[in-house]
Image (cartoon, rainbow, N blue to C red; front, side):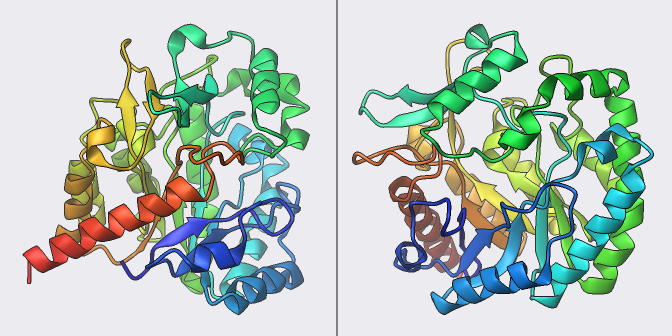
Length: 358
């Protein structure tokens, strides 16, 4: 696949080096971000330029940003949102100037994702992230402390300290925001930024909720096909698109992930794909992450890749969360070895499907 990528947290906060990524066969893209710019502030051109130069000097491309996070005032719908939206517009323009084509983002209140175990041990002694309802601590503060303790000193995406330090205030601020209000606030945001995206040819790609269900009484609005159709209609434009994360959507067994891909890629509404597998556990809705191989999980990765091929997908794709294997102890879900194996497997499936059809 020509636009296979690898998420990277930057030379200051990632044990993985760009030269390591460059050595993964078939990998051409780095999916990056500026992690030292506070949420809501404009991304400075000089920092974008420095990141782009660093990536390109390693022989890779930087065309996808994950993520330009949305300030909570926008999601809540506070009067201050207008200034944060203006800042977001300027960030889009700055990124476009340096060749960025896709911005991945989410619209989840407080928590960007949630797991109850960051080091769940499988029978082969590899470790993965897992979600078990019975292990869910019904106290957000305790859940935050658990994630911070288990993250091995790394900042986890969506769990930035400055944001989580005010979690109690955020829960109070979101108390009047239900799914309908959150959707209304998303429309307000999209109506403001999509014209700028069209002007700059930068596509927004909204990431699904993870897990795809309400938690702690917080609303979730991108859980399934029906939600995607509703979001699509909030602002009709190919620049209002989706990141299809096979793992996040696949965490609900009612979601037919290949069918979702066939529908939304065919409509040119999915410029970015996260490809990963998950394995359902005993209780409904419980799962652990797994190796990418179909036989290791509950998702059929062949059918997922075939759906992409059949619909002419030519966007950006990356392997998502991997296992901790071979003694690697890094940011949970974001080690080098298993994600590299995932890329090799996904590219192998793609090659086989291409040759079957030529």
